[in-house]
Image 1 (tube, rainbow, N blue to C red):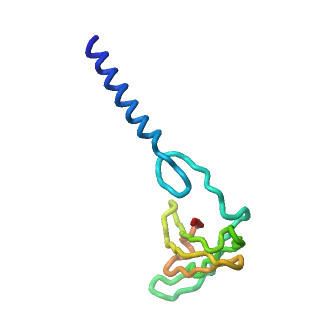
Image 2 (spheres, rainbow, N blue to C red; image 1 turned 120 degrees about the vertical axis):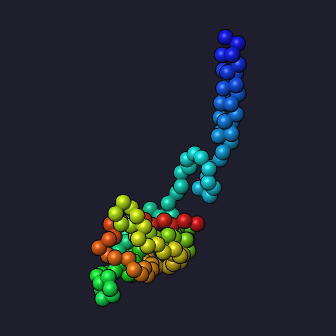
Length: 132
């Protein structure tokens, strides 16, 4: 019985310590930690992505996704203009086929970036992140 009480006491102290450490983690949209935080979008409208396939006659002949364009950007003051972006073209099982990073323009509603070596037939999705 004495062993059981000692074991329960030790378990209680350990649980309290771990719980206390986890409760001290803070989360915001600018830091990394454990928890959740709401992150506001920089625009209310949808950003659409299009790409222009270009034929390549190299050893692996076929169409490539070359010029990838973000359409519908809100570049007004305080919106998505001048913010950093990351665009990833994905294939089967959400595997990355290619990635571009940069800064969105401060005017206009479109931005085009150039990818190389990405088979247009392999593209099944795209991930766009605008941050900053």
